[in-house]
Image (cartoon, rainbow, N blue to C red; front, side, top):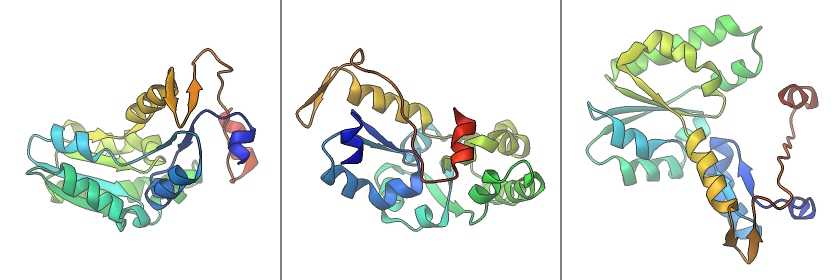
Length: 193
């Protein structure tokens, strides 16, 4: 109700874990389009040359039926390994003071990716692209790194561009704007604006 009162035309659940846990409930209980951030499993399984993909997520996403459904739907003949980190998102939130720990955790994860002989790594947490350069440093050009931000942005454009969704006609020209809300630390949110 709050978002409707604010005049929102679409909602983005900007977290893989929140998406896999709540997207179906949100979509069934709100009258505006809800776009979720999901692991880029489909493009990864299409892109891999060696048919070996690693998906890095939080433990909740790793254990979710939604991630396993995505893998089973799109894997084709690819071997998909699910990796998780219980600490990386938290450590990223506390950078730069946690930079040494982030570096060590990324090194540990990259060793697993290389042990699996993956040529494609999916960053399945919205925090992880913030340290993509660390992954690139340790994995080099042999491993392609995918994350879903471009696909999510394209979906937001699709559902808000002159489309009737749930009896709501939305035009890009009509009161367009971006509102960012968080239940986290207000100082961190202000730093983004």
